[in-house]
Structure formats: structure tokens, C-alpha cells
Length: 291
Picture 1 (cartoon, rainbow, N blue to C red):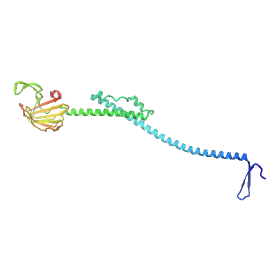
Picture 2 (tube, rainbow, N blue to C red):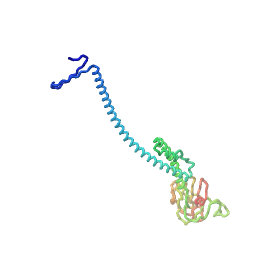
Picture 3 (cartoon, rainbow, N blue to C red):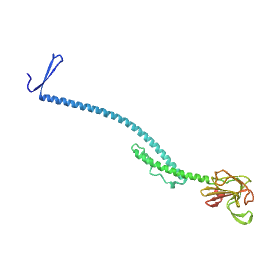
Picture 4 (cartoon, rainbow, N blue to C red):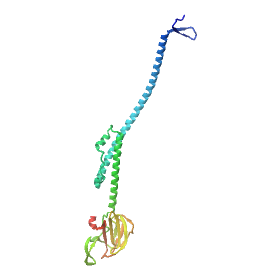
């Protein structure tokens, strides 16, 4: 006879030969249900936590791998930054030396704002990437401007040197200098000789002492056959008494080009070259200038 207030659970084998009965009061049954639910919830949470832990562990290993890659990249960056800093040091020193040698140090100004102390600080692991890049970009831009200025300066200087007469245009003997002298055709007259006379055998080669453009080639009173070359930068040369001109008006000539031959045309007492050097529309003594 079932007891009142009890709940009985019957368990039987498949053959029915064995039967088990388990009776529980309602409070006990509720307690067992609560315990089972608690175990179920705890097991679910444990399973969830385990799965989450597996995910976190995977993330941890991934972060370790990324951190190793980052550290290697950071080390490579520090090496490259150090090498870049050394190159910038060299470029700054070279630019400074070139500026001093060219006499443009004051004109170009200093780079500034990037001392060796700052550079050493940037090379330390604690320095920020953006700060380092910003500093290097600024210094690189300033160096680029300085080198452009130096390039322009030396380009102009190279053109000036190429346009500056470096030697006498013919081999021979100087028979007349620049300045007041007696007129060779009338000793009672004193005139101003604007060039030098260089005596050389008839037909001797006359070469250009500098680059320039022929602005006149032909006959002119007193000079006979004459070649006039504009070398720019206010420099001009004249070659008079030529037997023959070897260039034409408008022709560009380079240093050592053949421009004519020694002759006796014009107002002259014998074969020689009358050579004039003009600076900013004023005749100067070629001998003193070439020295």
C-alpha cells in the first residue's frame, strides 16, 4: 500500500524479473531536482568556460606570435633608424662643409633643430615611431632644400668658370699692353690701348679661352677681321687683325675651339692678335685678370 505523501519511482528490467522502487517525499524530490538542476547549470557553465578558455588560449598564442613579430619588426626599425640617423649625420656634415667651402653658409642658413642628443634619444626603444619619423622627415626636407641650393650655386659657378677666360688665345709674345701708349703710326699721338697685342707667326691658330656665343664675326674699322664673343656674366672678348675668321655670328663656341687665324688685317704693323677682355662694359687688362 503506497504511503501518503510519498512519490514512488518504479524501475524494472526488460524481462520484468527485477523491480526497484524508490519513494521520496515532495521536499526531498524537490531538493533532488534542484540539486540536479544546479549540477546541470554548473556543468553547462563549466563547459562554456572551458570553451571560452580554449578561445582565450588561442588568442594568447596568437598575441604571443604577433608580439614576437612586432618585436622583430621593432628591432629592424631601430636598426634602420640608426642607419638613417648616421646617413643624416653624414649628409649634414657634408652640406656644412660644402656651404663653408662655397662661401654660402650664411646665405643658406643652418639646418638646426636636430641635435645629436635628440638623435640618440630617437634611437632608444622608448622613442615614439611617429616622433622619429616626423623628425627625420623634417631634417630630410631641410637637407633636400640645402642640397638644391648648393646644386644651384655650383651649377652657376660651373657656368661662370666655363665662361671665364682661363688662358691667352694664342701662343706668342706680348708686344703691347693695356693702357696709354704712343700711336704706332704717329708717335706724336697718345691713345689708349684697350687690349694686349700678342705677336705670333702669320696663320697661327687662335682658340677660344672660354665658352660663349659669337656676337660678331667680320670686318670692323681699325680691327680688320674681328671675332667678338659674349661669355655671359658680363664677360666679353674681342680678337682683332685676323687673317680669317673660323666662326660665324650666332655660333656657340666652347673652350679650346678654333675661332680664327693670326693675320695683318686692319690697322697693324705686322702679324699679331689684338686681344681685348671686357668686364661689365669696361675693358680690363687681360694679363692681370688671367693671372
